[in-house]
Length: 46
Image (cartoon, rainbow, N blue to C red):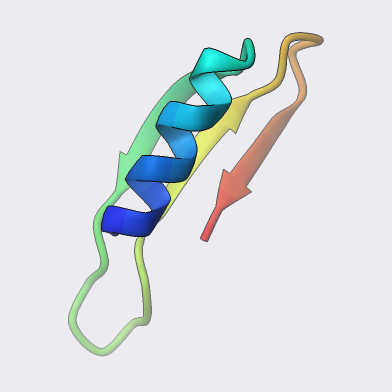
């Protein structure tokens, strides 16, 4: 998640908005961060 957090911070500096963070659950894979671009489109960092 540290790499995702670093990328989220970089994108916020470029105008994106952080929406929410989902922690990894045991046995279900990695966590992810939901973001929104300046035009309002949502995307995930995973």
